[in-house]
Length: 242
Image 1: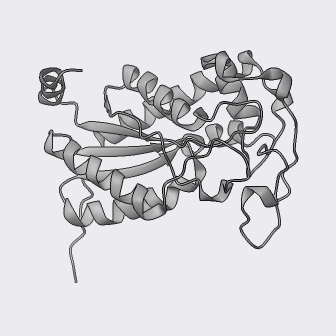
Image 2 (image 1 turned 90 degrees about the horizontal axis):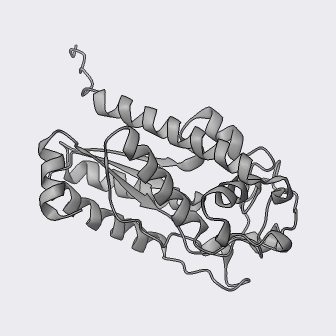
């Protein structure tokens, strides 16, 4: 979009911006390292076609420190760096006229950084509204689809199916290898090399393009519904004090 087109969209009443935040990291031997940012950006763009919103350029790097350097291909930001990048992009987006910003994450451990950014932005910009959502946290049925084969999933059935449908060139079917989730019931949080030999957690062998089509339609539909509800939501009515 050009600057004029962005201004016209905002003048017409589109005041929600979606900032996709992904990661560039290993996804086992069968998925491309851009899985998380590609998924977040693609879902955001498709949902914005249903419920109007402006999709900001994706941030392709996330907080992937838990992957360590055990496998090639991970490029991670430190938590404070990602928080700062999101805040600076958001400040400029607000100056363009947006009033509401959704941080749509395709990577699990981006959440603390995005939450920290919101805490600071709400203080700086009290007339704006902010929210963070993971792709699998958009709705209960999205969560159920992503976690069918693993609660602490990675490069699993859901992520693999999604790419088999959206970008089959990012998938190496002959390299798929199932790894069970060993984290349920554990007390501590562990880096990935302590929980998987390959970077996979789940059963990507169950993935298919047909499953990916169903997932895509579900996630896009539920995000579009979320955007519609968010667009219509008024500020809370503060009850009278004592």
